[in-house]
Every structure is written in structure tokens, then in C-alpha cells.
Amino acid sequence: AVLTQSYLDQIERTKDLNIYVNVFGEEALQRAADLDKKYAENPESVGKLFGMVVSIKDVICYKDHEVTAASKMLKGFKSLFSSTAVQRLIDEDAIIIGSTNCDEFAMGSSNENSAYGPTKNADNPDYIPGGSSGGAAVSVQAKTCLVALGSDTGGSVRQPAAFCNVIGMKPTYGRISRHGLIAYASSFDQIGLVGHTVEDMALVLEVISGADDYDSTVSQKDVPAYSAAIDSEKKIKIGVIESFFDHPKMNPEIREKSKEMLKALENKGYELVPISFENIDYLVPSYYVLTTAEASTNLSRFDGVKFGHRSQNISDLESLYRFSRTEGFGIEVKRRIMLGAFVLSSGYYDAYFEKAQKIRKIVKDEINGLFSKVDVIALPTSMDYPWKIGDANQDPVSIYLSDVFTVIANLCGIPALSFPLEKGADNVSSGIQLLSNSFEEQHLFNLSA
Ligand code: GLN
Image (tube, rainbow, N blue to C red; front, side, top):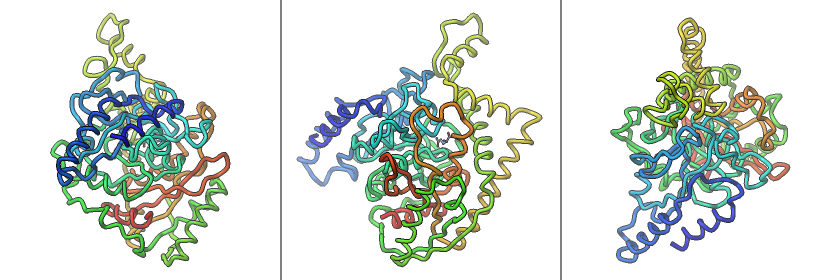
């Protein structure tokens, strides 16, 4: 209870950063007191995450708590059930402290697309924290909780973690149930974790992963005891995509710090293998065709009838749909629904959607080929440091392009982890990214440790 109170005090002190949408303060304290009692009665009876304070992104359902996807569309909506991930945290005696701010429906890279306004980077509040799980990353960065659950469709956990000087990881597609995660692009979405240490994150991952009757895409594979198996000395083969680090648009300071980090690994006895990746120009276009297509169908349920805000200005059924969606969704979400509906429409389906699916397969094959030579692939998390809040707002395409290094893992469904590099100018940071083959999360934990 003392620990939970100290996190709540820290939430109060960092209010200006706009990290939380809802803080479940009283309830968290009550739960902490109950858990203390349980421990006092029998220390053996408490769960694996006894007393661990966790935040959840505002796209993850927690029974009887508001969940809004940072959208006016869902303002006031209370979840009727808990997501599998949250239920498993609770079953192991973790404490959910609140829901964190994010880009609306997890669409964005800066947290500036939220109906609640942007979250600020705790290391320098003039800067974005990254997105879409910006609130999740800052909740850990600002020490308002130990671990945060976010979601990662194209980098939303790894990029903000890099910008906020913490660790972010997205497991294999199907490792964690998506039951109770508000869908953006279902064949890409995965719950991800933000933390200060891989030990904490490995422990949480093994609790929330694994088979679930509510999600048919979740893997039936056994969940390894990641945390007990962490071996920081295990020498694995690291493939380095040099052309990415040497990309002309790469910030030279990040390039330099990444190379120092890789050099240090080599000095420690790791084998570094230069590898190449050809299809870089097709990553962002195929990602944005496929995810907007999936989003346009996933978001059709928010129509003022089945779910979501209902306009008061209506005269018939069509105006109900039209005005409810016009009023409820923000500009970026509308842009993506229109783009998605366009690439799925007859006459354009073959030219865009089908082509993007083919590219996805080609990218997967290329990455698979690389994993026959190496255990882990190292690449940058982002080309650049975070930008100042408001600076990039007018240009969605350049923001989309900034996702180039993170979308690979989601196109392929493989695990990925971003590890912070030394801070840059203005006290903000970036990271280096590690990919492993499907269900080889342990490599990422070992190497990061
Ligand atoms: N920035 C990417 C997008 O806007 C990734 C978002 C995410 O992973 N949720 O789609």
C-alpha cells in the first residue's frame, strides 16, 4: 500500500505531462491494502506479480472502467469485461493504477492525435513522447508505475519507448490474446510492454501470454518461463542491417551511438554479421494500405447504434450514421477510414490491397531468409529524435514515413524490442531495435539484459 501510494503521489506531481486518462486511485489503494493482508496471513499465497503497479493504455478493456481509445467517439463508455491480459495481471495480484493517453484508436506516432491533447515527454516537456502508446511510455519514464501495457500495430510501443529512454517490446503476433484490445488493424495488433528492466517485462510477458478461448489467432504454444531463463552471457549471432544505420536520412548522432553500442557488443564476444535488406521502400506503403483497410472495417462498428457517440442532430438513419461519425472521430481517424475504404473498393482492390498483401509475403520471406543466418537482427528504432510538440502536425505523410523501421516486425508478425541509447541533445533519446524470429522472445531478453 505504501508503494502504491507513492506511485499515486508521483502521478499527482506529474499531472502536467498529461499521462493518464483515468487514475484508479482509491480502488488501487484498496486493492493494495487487501493484498497486504493476504500476504500477512500467508506469504505463500500471493501471486507472481504481487503488488506490481501497472498502467494500461486506453485501448485495453478493464471491466467496469471507462475505455475510450482517446476518442470522443467512446467518451463515457465502460467496458463490460476485462481483456485477457488485464485479467491475468489481476489473477497474479498486480495492481492496475490507471489508463494512459494515446493517439486516437492507436493511430499516430506522436500522441498528438488524442482527444485529450498530447502527452509530454518527461525528459523535456517541449517534445512529443512518441506514439501511439505515448502515455504508456511516459508513465514508466516518469516513474508513475513499474510496467505499462501498450499496443503495437506498427511500432507504437517501441518508438515511444525509444523516445522516452525506456525499453519497449512487442512479442510475436499471437503470443498475447487480443481479447479486450480495441482493434485497429487486427492482423498487426499485439499488446506490448514498456518497462525499465527486461526482468520485469519478461515476468509480465509470461503471465499474460498463452492460449485463450476468446481469441482464435492466439498461439497454443506453451509459454516459456522467460524471466527465469534470462541469460545475459549467451553469445548469439547478431545480424546488422548496415544500410539502415547508414541511411542518408538517419540522424548522425543516433547512427554514431548505435555503432558504439554494436562495437561494445562485438568487444564482449558477440559475432556481428553484416546483412542486407532490399525491400525498404515498400514497407511503409504496404503497411499503410493494409492497416487502413483493416481499420476501415474494424471501425465501422462505431456508428452511434452498435457503439459510440450518437449525434443529437439527426433526422433519419443516414444522418444518424453521418453526424455521429463526423462528430465522434478526429481528423486522422477519418483520413484512415477513407483511405482504407478506398483501397478495398472494387476497381482499386487489386491495384492496392492485393498488391500490398503480396509485398507483405515478400517481406516475410526476406526476413525469414535472414533468420537462417543469424539469431537476432539489429536495426534502428527510428531515423531521428522526437520532434517538438506541434512541429510535424501538418504533414501526415512524413509522419507515416518515420515508421519505416518499426513496421517490419508487424508485417512479419515477429517479436521486436527497442533498447534506449544514450540521450541526445535537448535531453531526449532514441533507441536501437532488435528483431528475433517468431516465438524467440528469449533472445531479445538475453541480449538486452
Ligand atoms: N505510427 C503507426 C501508425 O500510426 C503505428 C501505430 C501503432 O503501432 N498503433 O499506424
